[in-house]
Image 1 (cartoon, rainbow, N blue to C red):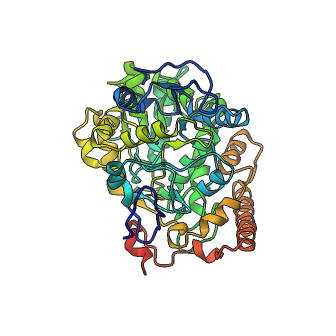
Image 2 (image 1 turned 135 degrees about the vertical axis):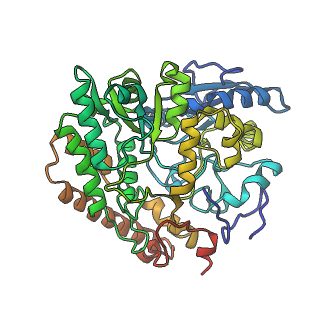
Image 3 (image 1 turned 90 degrees about the vertical axis):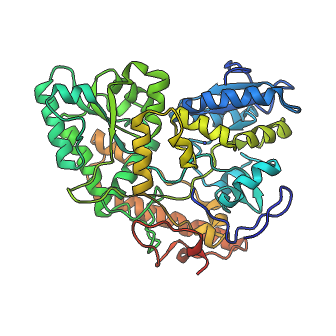
Length: 486
């Protein structure tokens, strides 16, 4: 493994491991890092579950030499990307922010001036250096972020209302696990409860989340691709294959049977989750952060909820999920002025104390499992994290094997409509043929990758489409650092 210092080139050979306050701050919408007040550090994020951990960290930071007050703004997940775009255009970006909604790979975001490198303290760097990956956290040998969450997770768990299941004569201790069981449970709820109660609610108004959830459901149905739609073994785009088609058609059947809450097409995750918690539906698919949001904003639902694993197409099929190594959560803006202070604060977000507080907030689980075990998290959250450790696996990523892949990714432009928008169109009836639409997405995505590879090659990159293929990949295994050394 290559040694790392804060100010020296960081190479990636062998660097791979599994893998995003209010006290001394205010929440007013004043300017960001580009024009922020001197002596104040500006921070934006999309995670209410991290606010308690961040509040304690920011209070500690303010009292340290070189520290200062933090001015914080929370942005709802589906709206953060737009807020950041507007802030960048007016030179009002905060010093530190999360990057949900900026749907480009790290090299492209750096190329467009979104980020600048960070310099962690020696102690913080020593803790995290083995998790840093070129093209994910590092670009051209410079560190831009680091993971504060575990790689092993999925974002389509089956959260449910225990009281509603009991009222319908269903057993909350044995929630549905297959497509057929889920449909049967939904039909029972509709029949026995009726009225204005529906069985299932979806955040269809948030295409990014829709794409994520369909991807995970497709993996549980047998897909061998992450959100990019690229098959691990062949390197080809496979959006149009049976696992995607079957998962989407299953979801569409719930709408057809009038089991989905009307108006779901206009709901983002915040609205859909709140409606679910107030009794509009029995089931809601979501990630691990659902428990933390219940604890923070929907506490009246604390004793009424529980969670089941992600659904599978048929009995006997194991839940399986794949994710690339966890990326960074917090990023230093390219417009940031309080750079030294921001580096110090980011270093404080990489300690055992911080990770325990993170687990207490129940967002994406922290990278060290022991923090979850000793936390005050709900039983539902701890149970789900245990399932993650059993059924979620680390996917291969081409930029670890060939760092020049990141140069091609920097040239890529997003294909529109993407998976999430297409699924929205399927629910609205604007997209009639599921498989044909997905095949067009596969073809357009492959064509765009070819164009990006050609552009990168013109600029000296040594990269081909074969870099995305991992013929030695095996199902339900972690593609760890030893695999890249072959």
